[in-house]
Each structure stands twice: as structure tokens, then as C-alpha cells.
Length: 163
Image 1 (cartoon, one colour):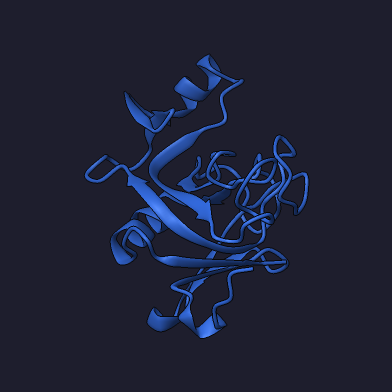
Image 2: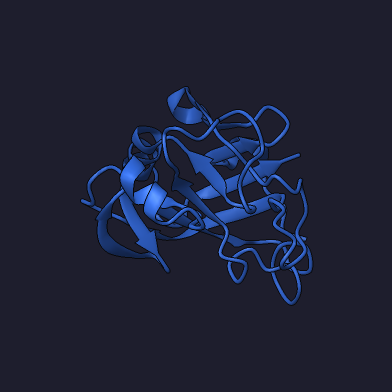
């Protein structure tokens, strides 16, 4: 099991409080985690716990509300009209920070791998509620907040997700 001290974390996500903190910068953001609860199992729609890193970042210089599918910008910018046209979409907007688990057998490896589960920190429509679990396992943020976070933390930033 990978061990780090909590003060080493660049990002701390508190699932109980539905917050994301950058303690070194004294910043706290309200988030929305998995509506199916907390857990590491593949295809569960739950938000994984434990130590992670920001494996990859997508969306540098994209406009706020830029729409992403499979981590690629579609060229669309989210709007109420676009939402009405595609009501089935799970909107991934503005920026993506793709997480990778660091704890073998817990959030890394077969059946529980955060990276293989495509767990991101990403923007969501600003009409979506924050502070309550509503995602498919990802960490959703307001678009301006995720754009700020994207600029403040590098790839390989250490992330701790606490239940």
C-alpha cells in the first residue's frame, strides 16, 4: 500500500463535505462526486478513495464550457440549446484532470483501476447542483473553478480522496 502524509497532497477531495481543497494555496471549491456513492469497483459509478495523481490534463486554452468527448474537444460550447439537443450526454466541460490510482489492489490494478475507469476532475454545466453527489464517479466542478484548478496544479500533482 502506498503511503503518503496528508500534508504532501496537492489536492484533497473530501467526499463527505463535497469539497476539493488546495491547502497550500488556501483554496476550497465545492464539488459533486459519484451519485452511486464511494467505491473503487469498475463499472460501479462510484468515486474511488485513496491516493491518486493527476496523470494527464486536457483542455489547455479551451474556452469555458468547451465540450469534450473521449478527452477531445468537439468544437461545441455548452448551452441550454445544445443540452436540449443531446439530453443523454454526461457533459464533460472546460478542462479535464485525469486521475490515476497509486494504491495497488485498491485503486490501481484489475477491477479497481481509477485510470482505466476514466475518473476525472472536470467541468460540468453551471446549472448542475454542487455540494451533492450527482456524477457517474468523477469529480465535477464549476467551469471557472476547474479552469483555475487546471492552472494551479501540474501533471503528477498528488491527490488524496477521503471518504
